[in-house]
Structures are given as structure tokens and as C-alpha cells.
Length: 461
Ligand code: SF4
Image (tube, rainbow, N blue to C red; front, side, top):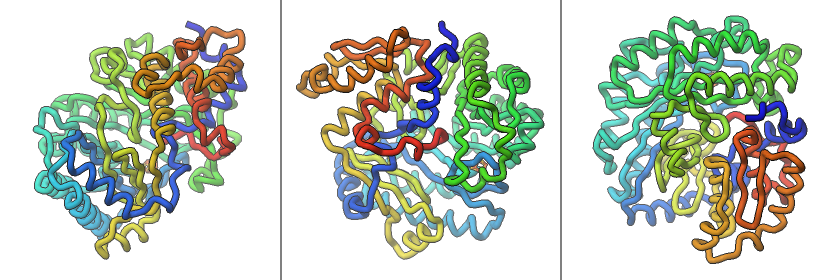
């Protein structure tokens, strides 16, 4: 396999500015022309089907401010404020449930943030009870119940309590365990704490543990990262996500606290990325899509192997044909070919929900062309290849002819390299080109090609 640094530098730089394609079109295309009435129509249509449904709850609160953060979050430890938001989530759930009736079957519930474990065990218990009471939920063996965890706020007893409530997957925000890097990003958490929580999760019977890592952080060097990877590999989480840090202080004010002189150069960032990739493969992990890794017997690795892996707002997923309802500030729903996003401001979100209104303020209805492009982009991001013959049969179109301009553009990108193969049959990104999946996907992004500025995109979901 070619080292990643052998890929053209200009394409690697472009890749880091590309959308993460957790949807197509991306959220930048959402607008106020799609509002509450459109969402209600889509939800009522979904209610007539027994489709699998995923619920996403956004918990925006964090106990302190990580300097690299690009998430929608509020720093507070005020329990009253958190309880008020929690009660609003219950009210929003009630409104969505009334629309969905007991049609679709909930097969996944995920809590993201922010810091979901700012909610107490009691709050999780109340919320889960309300979901079971109001919606049709898959039996526990088929239900994926997961949460993103800030290790600094978790105790061993929490892990056992969450498991008793039915949680079966945890994702720990590890980022980097090097002391200097942790100080530079204002996120100090000990290796001992992470190791203890991981061991507890294993003993409690969690079926899958994920670690989120970030590379490109201030003071990260290959030597420091090597030490952090030793620790991560020793813990052996089933899944690892390795995100690139995008330094966009104008867009994410928390990042202004980062000393730019401490950021790794583009060359060092590529070395860090190549090191993560090489070390994890050597340790027995499989590379998944753009930036994920999984042990071979993990469901995600199996899904990638048999071609059933999907991509949605939560990243890579094993769930097929799942509709999504997002609850909470800034949460996005995806159902019946529509996207709907809640207000990104907590106060406005609360004002809407507390007066009995859904908080959806923008969205988008996919066209037939969007749906086809979404499938192509998802195939690139998940499998690194697109079979035009197979896809064309379903869409009743000669895709080689329809996408000739895109294929031409891809041939130019590929140049003399062997990282990308293009033909009338479709395209294939080789293992050595994995780092450029987004560059290939961007060619099929009509909105981007029509003139959207790629610099507006973040590299962190
Ligand atoms: S990185 Fe996570 S824990 Fe830190 S401020 Fe952002 S959302 Fe909160």
C-alpha cells in the first residue's frame, strides 16, 4: 500500500476542506423554505409505514470548554437549566410521537452532544420510559442504544447504571492522551480514568466501545501521538474514529484560545494521519470508510465487507434504510427524502417547544437528481466504489452518459496515479486513495460544483 503522503499534496489539502457527507445535500443547502408544515407532512407519511427508525437526542451542555470544539454546545453546570432543557426534550418527544403514531419501529436511540452524560441516570431513565410508552421500540436484542461519553464526568457506577437501562454501546471522547496536548486543548483527562471506564464497560457487558481521536491538534507530534496510540491499542476498543482537527476560529470562537504557532504543519498532519492508519492496521483493525477503524469481528467491519454499511448524520452505521428523527437544539431529522433541522439557538428552541410548537426552522426536500447523487456519494464514502450498471438499472438511466462530465473531471484528478480507476462502468478508489474519498465525492456534489465555497465546510462533525 502506498503511504498517504505519496498522494498529491494539493488534493490532500482540498480533502481536508471537504464536507463530511453525512448527508447529501449537506446542511448548507437547508433553508427556511422547508418548515414545520413540511416536516409534519413527511412525518405523517412515515407514520403509515413500519420502517426502521433511529432517534437522535442532542444534549448541548458541557461542563467546560475544549478549545478545539466545533460543536453546538453550551458550557454550564446549572442543574436547573439542564432540567428545563430535559423537560423540553420530553415535550418535543410527545409532539413527534403524536405524528408518528406507532408506525415505524425504533431500532436505534443515540445521545450526542455536547456532553450527553451531563444528564443524570434518573433523567435517562425517564426519557427512555417515555420513548417506550409513546413509540414502538424494537426488543432489547435488536435495539442499538448508544451515548457519547465525556470520561471526565463519568464514574464506574454510571457505566453499570447505563447498562442496566439498556445502553449497549458507548463512545468515549478520548482525542489524545498526551499531557501537553491535553493542556493545549483544555481537556485534561487521565489515561487511568479512560482505562478504568473502558474496563467497567466490558465487565458491564457493553457490546461495543468506540474511542474518538483527533489529529492535527496543537503540540501533537509523531512522537507524542505514537505514545497515545500505544495506550489506545492496549485498550482495544472495538471501534475508533480518527477525526481531523479543522482550525476555523472565525466560525468556532472557542478555537481562538488555540495558539496557532503550536499547530502541526500540513506535512506533519499528514504524517499523523498516516501514523494512525498504519499503526491501527498493524494492530489488527480494519480501515472503515474515510476515518473509522473497527476490529474484524465488529458489526461495522462486517457491514463494510458485505457492502451493507451506510452513512448518516451519526457517521458510519450498520443500520439499513433507517429514517431518522432528531430531537433537541440543532438536531436534524431525515425522513421520506426530506431533511429538517431544529433551531440552533437553545433559547429559541426552548421558546418553541415550551409553547407547544415543533422547533424545525429549516430543511430541504431532495429532488430525484439529489437522491441519485446521494447514493453515489454514499457509495464512495462507504465502499470507495460505484457500479454505474447496477445503479443505472434502478434509476433507468445510462449513468456513464449522464455523468460523463464528472468522469472526465475524475480522470483529470487521477492523473498518472493508481489511487483512482475510472471507466464507463463507474469508479473505484484503491486502498492507497482512501484519504481522498471526499475529493472524489465532491465531484458529484452539484451544489458544491455550482459555486459553493468549500472553505465553509468543517472537518469535524
Ligand atoms: S469537544 Fe465535546 S466536551 Fe468539549 S466543549 Fe465540545 S462538545 Fe463539549
